[in-house]
Length: 546
Image 1 (cartoon, rainbow, N blue to C red):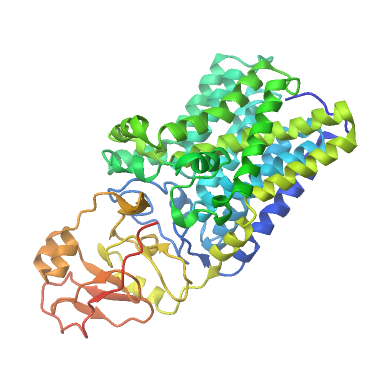
Image 2 (image 1 turned 90 degrees about the vertical axis):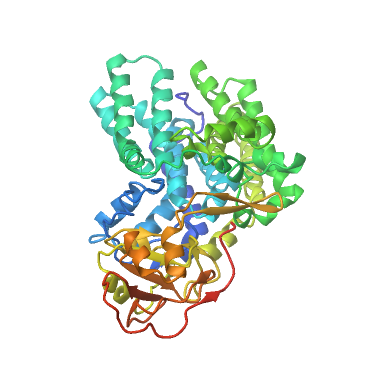
């Protein structure tokens, strides 16, 4: 990707133009999320004062899905508030993708950089990953072009290795991002033409570095449960590709498994055809050739454009889904069970090829024709997800935790705590209508025993992924404090006014006087305490189906 574009302007100015477009689009999508407080939306949650507790470090026997992200957040919180960290990550998960493409394509002119940035940022893929509450996963995707540019950096091996490390750290905040970064670095290193100073030892050093940034979640997984054996995860997190319409949705970067994260526009022909047209035109640009300087670049882009869609559709139903379900028994394979995440590579390849295609058109037909083509590409990108900004605006709003939150957390201290109701998501009036993953474990210094079973609506039913140990819940429900203590529980915290069933506390549990949404009982003292005030039993429905 070294060929110069005939359009005037230095590479620096071209990259700057692409970065400006990317940042403006990212802010257009996310500006309501900026402000005082934390973001509580589905999987993307944080607390005012996160601590380095067992849950944050991935040492509670559950799959390390947020390792080392939660630990990094807790370490930085005294300097950068957790809410600010969330907001920076949210904007960066979009802006860095476009900026990275602009840097990678800077020698092809400003128009190329702007088009590539716009197609990547304004995509069904980016919108649906945000709407499922996974900006950290999207951040790993956003670092892909930066990693390619870092591996191809001119200069000494030490300079390249340092650049790769800097580009990989944001991606390595999550297990999937770390694996994606490792794969991108290895493939790019093996397909980059030989340069002076590049040799096998440098490639091995890059691979070893990639293995090192994956160590935090690998170690956490080996210490606790790795979620191996959850064969239902393959079906729950497969892309939705029902019929021709579903296949077109996946082809355009949609098809998210969570119904609540689906864009309404993707149910209609204009959006589906617009995004599918962009992919088809990108494939034509690749087939015609002449826009890429090297054969290796063509092969890499061809694989990135086609393989993710083929894999996602193959593993969505039939024998492919059955075999993929059995593969989940292998420790670590569960990290790849969300096949929609693979489509991010296709989106990036589409953006690169469309940008290069417009540049080639400018060389052959002149700037007027290229300007028309560029406007058409951007219009199709917007038409592919016209409701994305409004949906993201409604989803991400900063909120302040109510009075009494810190009081309840302090009352629990470093005790092992059972968190009820027994389901992973909460809903509170002070947050809004959207459910959010229970953030309490992030605030506790001790171990939190909480449900992590996920229920995903599929084919008219619900697929449950997970195998929670309900020993402590059952002991609390029948009022057996001795059994509760035998299970290691020293405190019980219940959320008020949230869906789910909370059994009435047994008489021997000692209620701590707190305000706010959390009710605290201490059960670590075997002596009989005063009776707990009032019945707590409530059933408000289940919102765990996503």
